[in-house]
Length: 624
Image (cartoon, rainbow, N blue to C red; front, side, top):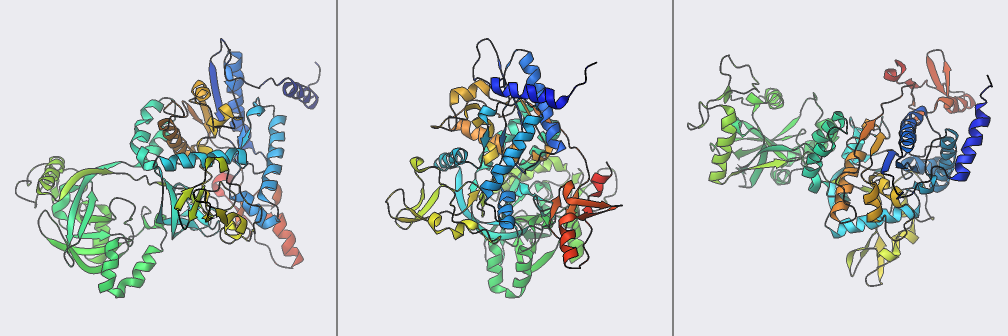
C-alpha cells in the first residue's frame, strides 16, 4: 500500500482548489437550490486553537455534503476584527492595531487554508476595514432617522481595565467578560443606545419560528434575558411631600400585606429626601457606587437605608416606612417596590434584618402557614370584598378595583434594556455624529462616509484615544459648513457581527451594504454554527438587527438563522497570570510538576532576582 504523504497530497490539491476557484460560489445557479452554511466568524487573535478547528470542521462537512447533494452552497469566512485586544497590543508593543490585526488575519487565513476548509475566499470580509465599517455608520444613520437611536445620560457598566463601557450582556458575575478578574463599577456617562426594547415582543414571539431548529436551551436563555413580566402598577403617595411613587408588582393580591416600600438609591425621590436628611448622603453614595450585578446577586444579603419618610398605600390608606435598598434598580420597573415580607423571601429577610413589620394576607387552605408563605392560598386580613377568595382570583379582582379607583393599572415590564453601544475606545467604528454650535447634533452625510479612524493617536492605556486626535475631533459641519466637533465614541463591536452574514451575500457592493434581491435569495442562513455563550449577546443582537433591517425594507425574512448548532467546548488546561492580568497561551507557559509559570515573567523575575508567582490553572478545565 502506497504511503500517504499528507503534506504533498494536501498541498497539491489545495493549490488546485485555489487555482480553479473550486469553492467560489454564485448567487444563482440554474437548477440548484441555494444553501447557506455559516460558522460564527472568529476574532483574529493570531492563532487558531482546537475549538476553531472543531467548529469549522462541522461547517465544512455540511458544506461539502450539501454540494455533493446538488445544492448551490454559500460557505464564506471573515474576521470580527475590531476590539480591545488589538488596542491593548498597540499599548503594550507600540504596534498600530491595524498592523497587528492584519498580521494575525494573514496567519490565521494561512492556517485555515492548510486545514483544507472549503471557503469561498472571494467573499471574505474584515470588520476593521473602512469598506466594511462604512456600512455600520450607514446603518446607524438609518436607525437614527427611524427613531431607533437615542442619547442619554445613564449609569453604565464601566471596566476599569478596559477604560470603557460594557453592555449588560458583557458583565459576567460582576466581572468584565474580557477580564475575568476585573470588577465592573458604575459610572454616569452620556451614551448612545439602540432601542432593542421596541422589538422585545417580536424577539419573544419569533422563538416559535425557531423552535425545532434552535436548541431549546438558547431559546430559554433569550426568553429569560428579555424577561417579560405581567403585573400591576400601583401609585403610592409620599406622605412628606405628596409626590406620587408608582411601583410595579406581579403580586397585587398581597397589596394589603405591604409593611414598607423600597426605592433604588438612584431614584429621583432620594434627591428630595437628601435635601431634608443630608445625614444619609454618604451611605446613599456608597450604595450607588456598588456594582449593579453584585447588588442584585442571588443569595447576597440585601442592605437598606431608613429615609425616615413614609408612603401611603392607596388600597387601605395605611402609611408605611420608605427605605432605600441596594437590591432595587432604577432601570427595572419603576425603581420602587412595595415590600410584603410575609409572602416574599427577599422582603422577609430584609424585614427581619431591620426589624420591620410582617403581615400575612394569604394563608394555605389545609395547613398552618410558615412564613414567608409564597404558595397559592386564600386571602385574609384584606378588604372585606376580597377576604376568603383565592389569591389567583384576587390578582384579577384587586387589579380591577385599583383601575376603577384610578390608582392602579395592569401592565407589563421587560428585564431587557436598550442596548448601550457607546465605547470609549479607538479600535471600533466611529459614530457618524457631529456637534455644531449653530446646527446642534447632526449626522455625517452619506457621501462623507466612512468617517475614518485617524492616525495621529496616542495609545497610553488611559481614557479614550480618540480624544487625543485633534484632526479627528475638529471637523466641518455637514449642514452649515461651520466648525463642528466629532463624537469621539466608537460603536460596540457587537454591532459589526450583528449583520456580517448579510454582507457575505453581496460583499463587493459599493453602493449599499447589500442588495435586497441577493439577500432574499440566500437568507435566512440554513445552518449556523457557534457557541452557546453567544445566546444573549450576538444571537439576540443579530435577530434584532435582522428584524430592524426588514422593517426598513432592506430584506424580507423574519429571522437570520433557520437552524443553530451549538458545537460545545473543547476542554484543555487554562493558565491565568494575575501579574499580567490575562490568560496565557500554552507556549507561553512552563510546567514544573503541578505548577505553571509564565516564561516571560520568569525571565523578568530572574533578571531582577525576584521570586515569580505561579499561575492559576483553572481547576474545572484541568479535570477534563
